[in-house]
Length: 244
Image (tube, rainbow, N blue to C red; front, side):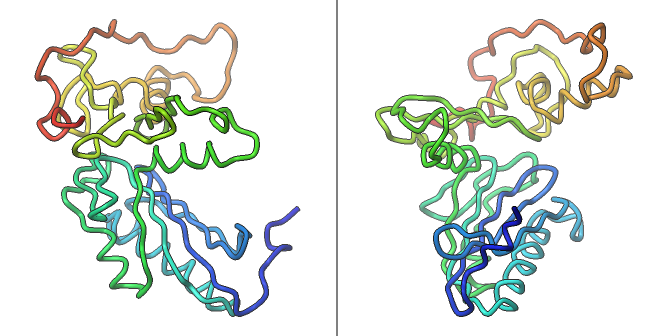
């Protein structure tokens, strides 16, 4: 059954939620009780080659749809990868987006004139997992949630509290080197977990080996990967190593 069959009455307030990924940016406009009013997806580097421009473009499309339906936009929620400071509303560092100290909350609030909230994409997904009526984390106060996409990270929950770390980097294990002198990562290091274990990396390695990333014959094997090893002390970038 289509989401559009459950549109809210004209004049009701609406919010826009956006998930910024390394490949695509997905978003939706929601009415009362989580009713979906509109959905949209754009390439992350499609608008002028800029993830920020693509984010503004996507939110603009959704905001226009909200207005066209007679609704009122009252807030925007953004989920971003990387080191995220939700309090300051800034993405401190996101290797896959090429971002350093991007004050995205202030930028979007000024552009659209409504309150904006920012959260780490993994923690946002874990919050949704806990809130879902049927989900693995709905009854748990201690768990680790690992979303795998263009990048890879984890949301850590202990005692029902989300662990963020001193610089917002708790769970950012994707940039921990595990293969000495391995493949180059977008963060500038070599041999990071993300280079081998993210969805995009796995698909890329299959393609390089001439194997379809879709389910293939049982005899098909993934390309070989060097045996991982524990990172040497001090191997992580300073921004990550300061995380608590």
